[in-house]
Length: 88
Image 1 (cartoon, one colour):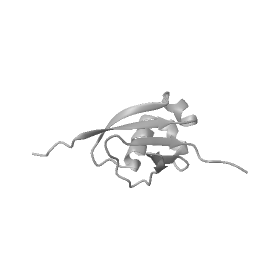
Image 2 (cartoon, rainbow, N blue to C red):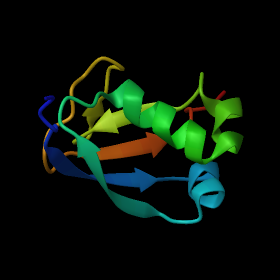
Image 3 (cartoon, rainbow, N blue to C red):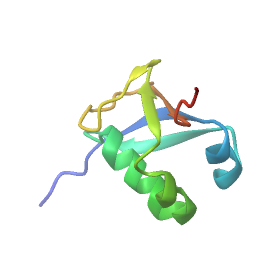
C-alpha cells in the first residue's frame, strides 16, 4: 500500500495581469510535500489556461528571492508571480 504524502500550505501572491487572470491578488494553497516552483506554475497554467501565454516571462519569487523552477517549496512559503521587468 502506498503512503499518502502530507500536505503543506503556501501563500501565492499575484500581480498585474496574473491577478486579473486568476481573479484574486492572493491565494492560500495546500500542496503535496515535495512540490516545486515549476509544479506550482504548471498547476496554475492548468487551472488558468490564459497564463500559458506568459509562461516564459513570469518571474517567480519564493520568500522575496528568485525562485528557481527546481526549488522545493516548504510549509509557509510565499510565492509571488511577478510580471517581467521592462524599461528603456
